[in-house]
Length: 179
Image 1 (cartoon, helix red, strand yellow):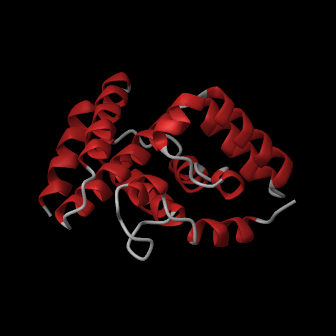
Image 2: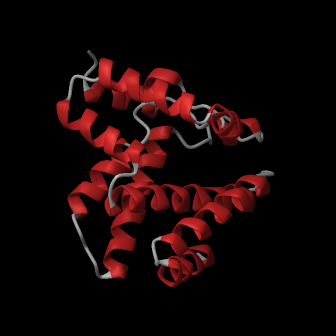
């Protein structure tokens, strides 16, 4: 069994593969831990804007823990992950359930993977928003990441409409994109 502190250290050094595959150097590329932190902060912003707070603590737990499976598998590029689909999710879930010593983390991770609550879905939405904002930053630096930006934006639109949060999310992205 592995502690959460050890998992955090692994994720702090694990660059996200999508950026690396598009030429973002390892010294510049966001790590999985960087991404999870940004996702958590985006979640706070969005929860405040929607005014329906639900369980903010749970949203934050989902956002912080949503990628802990990658401590065991590495960051699998999105296209490969999409092709693997349920197999990828199942393998990561099994490795987390067998390898993480925190009962809380295992439960939260399973709930996130299963998308079993509004809070889990909101964390997924914020995950996409965080990726989108990072993509805009890399694009402004001259990296060719338009495909990630476009694909992620489509996911944001789809999920925000499903959750009836489209106008809030659209306004948030517009504001954050101006900076």
